[in-house]
Each structure stands twice: as structure tokens, then as C-alpha cells.
Image 1 (cartoon, rainbow, N blue to C red):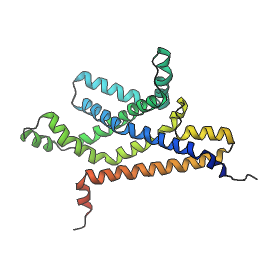
Image 2: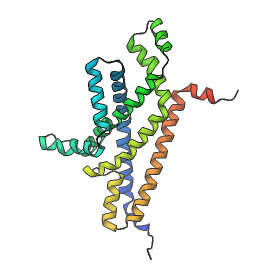
Image 3: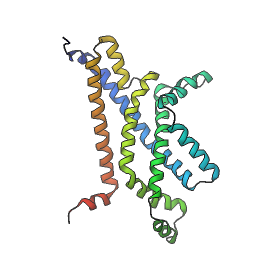
Image 4: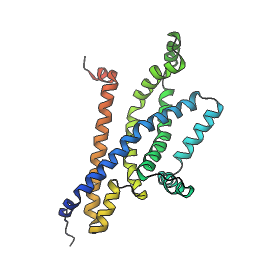
Length: 226
């Protein structure tokens, strides 16, 4: 009869905390650059010249149709064979930014396409330049319309940090591997790690939705009873 024992985890609590912080660090360092990259790619696909559209399309299709772990291996191991050495944390963040940028590009492209043409015509009548129209009219509306999809994508990105243990990044899953190899208590270790990821995903979703409450006042007004 298997006897559950979680007491040994007290000895590894500092390692677990460090793993949580590294997971959070990777996530925070990847969200904004990934969003900006995805937005630029979406604009290139919709408004760019023929070459910009082709390059953006190739990037999106290549990243969305190859595994994240292969992209990470190429950055960490592949470049090392060319004498270009990238540390585990840097390789993880770069891979996450490139990966989430491709998925964000498609989400933002859908958001841009939902903006009524009258909004663009109004911006033109107000003598806004194309760049000003993009920044002040299109991006805010597009982000508000697709924000739930963006939140889900960023949560998935946070969960994808578990792959980075394969390049010796000691994030939460990497710490779990280490603890399990020392204690041989895999059931308890991975159950606790699953709870940690559940908590982190819930926290990230709450934070991102809180940002929406501050950034999109129209959402609050629509929910306010008359």
C-alpha cells in the first residue's frame, strides 16, 4: 500500500520558491515583447508591402507549425554549434517571445479586421497620420476586442515555460525533476507542482484582467446597471 508523504518537500522549499520566481521572470519578460512583436507582424500582414506580407506570413506559419521545444533547442544547442552561446534564461525568453509573437499576430490581425471602416475614415478626417491612427484608434480597439484571447495565449505561454527545463533552466518543472531524482517521490512532487502551476495561471489571469479593468473603462460602463 502506497503511503503518501509530503514532509520531505520542506527541505526543498527554497528550490521551489526559486523555481516559481524563475517561471514568473520568464513570463513577465516575454509578455510585452511578444505582444509588440505580434502586433507589428499583424500590421505587416494587413498593411505592409508585398515583401513585408510574405516575410510576416512565413514567420507566422513557420513558428506556429513547429514545436516550441525545437525552437528552444535551435537557440540553445544549434547556435552553440556555431560558437554563438546563449544562456538558458535568455534562450528561453527569446523562444517564448518569438513563439507567442506568432500566435499574437493572428489574434491581433483578427482584432484589426473587426474595426469598422468608419473609424478609419473618421481618423483621416481628423488629419491623423496612418501611424497616429494605428496607435490611438486601431490598436486600443483591437486589443479590447480580442483581450480574452490574448489573456488565454499569455497563460498558455506561462505554462510553456515548463519546457525550458530541457535546456537546464531551473524553473518550476526543472526543480521538480531535481527533487524527484533525489527522493523518488514522483507522485507527491508532481502533484504539488501542478498546484503551483494552477495558482500561477490563476494569478496571471487575475492580474491581466485587472489591467483590462484599468485600461478599458468602457467595459466597466457596460457592466454598470442603469
